[in-house]
Amino acid sequence: MSNSPLVSYVKISPNSTNPRNRTICKITVHHMAGNLTIESCGDVFFPTTHNASSNYGIGSDGRVGMYVEEKNRAWTSSSAANDHQAVTIEVANSATGGNWPVSDMALATLIELCTDICRRNNIPKLVFTGDAAGNFTQHNYFSATVCPGPYLKERFPYIADEVNKKLCAAPPAPPSPTVPTGSQVIRVLTAWTGNTVKTMDVEEYLRGVVPSEVYPSWNIEALKAQAVAARSIAYKKIESNHGKPYDVDDAIAYNPDKINPRTDMAVAATHGMILTYKGMTAETAYSASNGGQTVSAKEQWGSDVPYLPAQSDPFDKNKANGHGVGMSQWGAKGRADAGQGFEAILAFYYPGTELAFVGSALPSPEKTPVEITVDNALADGVIVDREYWLNVLSGNNPANHEYIKAVFDRYHAKLK
Image (cartoon, rainbow, N blue to C red; front, side, top):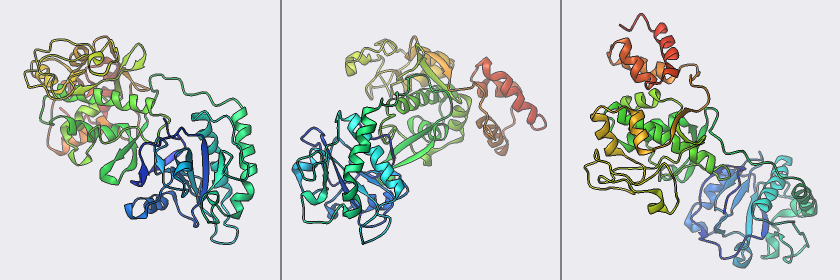
């Protein structure tokens, strides 16, 4: 069961029943009885003492927040029977009291959100009957309340008609699953920020992931292998979670407090590099140690993934720690210490995959990660020769050599 891609803010409320016990077949609309932002609405629903929540909220600016995932029942309508079947929506009021109006932006978003809910849950039509018998219902059908207010009540027939018009039209084509074509942002759900979603550039995200996964003191080739594997997973998550409110959660390590110059160098050296299989982003699973033998994806998860086979790994001499599928982080260190480059490390753990770049092989921000890495090294008093920088920063990839040389030209007065 998916959630709406219209969501731009998430704060999961503990006030819910998980999972719901009925199939979603209804939508119930409420008003906030105030001009709350979607963030403020999330704050209201977060304390366990409040005993209330909704699946979604819409602010007067038209933004959508999510407080309870659709797979779970929100505590919204004073009716467990209704809420187990309904996706519930709180809408902000643009003015307090009177007929409790809502903004045009909020009303337009409500229509779009209802359409999206119907499409994803195979609800063919919104039926407004003026009572609880229909599948488009109001809070006041289940409790002695004025909610959702006169303004929205009067517009229920209009909302249902507009939604049904959109349902009759051809739905927008889903994006084709292909290798991503440029720099993207990733949405990270983190418990340490109160179960809110933090949005950041993928490369910035990796700066906090790589040192959380492996020791920054390790061989640079092992760090680069980890950077590519983590970046590939990040882009795979972005693709597969397109219709969800966030791409990754705390299950994938991310800690910006651990950012380190050596892992920054590994991220910069492999900027934009991912692994692909037959033109698609690879699912680059990894764990701490396989104990000398990788585990196949079929054995571990029941899915036959050709580039995640079972094979002997003599470079991992540690006790097994983790699922054992794909790259062993300690095995990658052993291989790097033995002289293998990150390309060879990745080729062993993900046989049949190919290295590719997200978008252009040459990054083009105002100040590139390579330049930042050089600046940091110079600030630390590290002056090394041109060949070293060419190998480390290009990732031994010829496609990057001209770019790296251009960077050197800007720094020729500082480098040997």
